[in-house]
Image 1 (cartoon, rainbow, N blue to C red):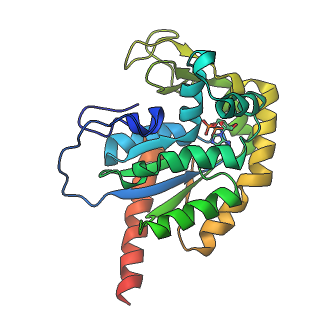
Image 2 (tube, rainbow, N blue to C red):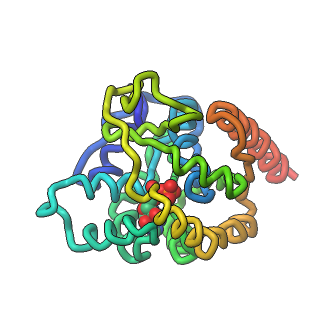
Length: 259
Ligand code: ADP
């Protein structure tokens, strides 16, 4: 979901041949953030709210795959067709496919409003490739936001999640229902349940998170970039908590740099 005057992420979703709308000048220093956390912890919802508050562009790898999957089959590359098979089963897409897609879109990491990477990196190999790329291009990462939530709450969130087919805004049947049933409040688009939010795929996704992605918590902790946030409460409360944790984090970092 993007808003007027904010990055519209066209180049991310459609690929580098598409151009994002020009951005207004901003006084603020842009933030470069990675959002970590198990599937269902609310990363996409937080990315959407943080985008509204901080302007940073929401770069979700899952959204790129889903957008490619909604194109006619004859327009899908063999790599995308393979990616969609993994995705439907709730498994991770091969690192080589994901990396090729991210590399093609690496210009988005220089977005004037900063970025919120959601769903990437997800394996140690992806994290190392990203680190190398950012070092080569002299790009700094501000912080890695690590959202934490107990497993039973994650399962409840995933099973009730509904996504707008148009603008990708995220709802929940009981926690964050739309005003009119199955209809997006923002764009009037139809809400649907993602294929991989069905119980059999959810189980695989949570196991995959534990075996592959949770190792990134240590990786970023060792780099001194990890900011852990409790993902309990309303989306707005979690967003406030995130902004406060980030402010606190930046102050502590600045103090350390001065010392
Ligand atoms: P969630 O975080 O809720 O699982 P995403 O939209 O981030 O949702 O990802 C959906 C699916 O897309 C994943 O289960 C996986 O199959 C695929 N995917 C997205 N990003 C990556 C990635 N960085 N590496 C491997 N697979 C990915």
